[in-house]
Amino acid sequence: MTYKQLFYFTGQCLSLDDHPNFRTTIIEKIKAEDINWESFVQLCSDHLVIPAIYLKFKAHGILNVLPRELSQTLKEIYELNSERNAKILLQIDHIIAALLPEKIVPVFLKGTANLLDGLYSDLGERMMHDIDFLVTEKDYLRTAAIMVDMEYSHNPSIYIDNRSRMHYPILHKVGEIAPVEIHRMPVAINHSHQFKSEMVFRDKKEVPEKIGLYVPSDPHKLLHTFIHSQLADKGNAYKQTSFRDFYDLYRLSKRMDVSTLDGQTGYRKKSISWLVFGGKVFNLPGRFYTPETIGSRMFCCKYDLSLSFIKTHQLYVSLKKSLHLIRVGYIGGVLKALTHREERLYLFSRLKNSKWYKAHWLHYKEYIG
Picture: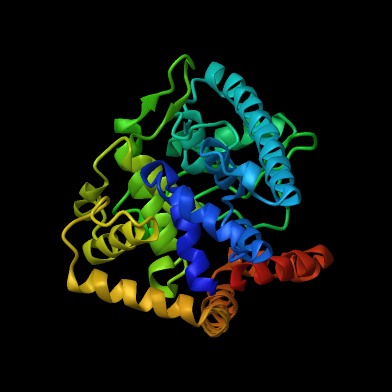
């Protein structure tokens, strides 16, 4: 299989519930040794969907046809993720217990919200990195102070700029499984006109049997996924989208009409392209949006090209991201430091911190990777 073929094969594996006959195709490919399992696992790992793949294979009786070592590997990763997510839910309980007595009502966002709201079929289905939650502007710094009292801490060299930051510096606590992001706005300031905090709080919903635990409405979960995936992470521009984001779209489509996204974003063409391509990924044409537009067909063609020449495309994206970081991050940061005292102090504190260089290098590799 080429990378492109493996990509679409993975999409159909994730949507086996809608393609039960595809099970026969998978088994035929397994028997014909037509699948490079190392490449398959690497792709699923890169896209953070191994637990979801495991559950699909288990539900459709494919695990016992796989090579024994592969089946065991998938199971172990799924079990580790289930254990981690259980600890994340316990960590959320601790956070809620500290905030509610102070009359602070957080709304949990992104993967955390989806997990709390039962969007997935299983506790271990979705891989998560951190805990994101939104609080009102007046509770923002007070919430951070409470978290510090709970022995959470952040890198002291990080400059806290309430004018432009959408969330407080990432907080860590020894003994807790996940880092925490306290948001004062759900998305970056350049996208906040499309998705405001007031919208989230107005339409929030309480998690059943969890008093004081709130998540965004399903339409807002969809909008947030689109903005995060296609605009903030530039999935539309770079033709690079995580299967994890596509899978969230797929799961949401089982609870709502996702085609309504085209009227919510302010980026109608981009949202339609994302929905149409999502339908192609899962071999569900028209499931997320119909009819196709000229722009969405062009987007799909360009995405196919990127998959056909994946190494060249990855090199192109890495170069483009590096140039953007140099222009906006480095040169822009120096220019800001020349005119703003706080930015200047922030810059000097980073340059004097020996640990910052290693952390920054790791972040850079993750950013362009």
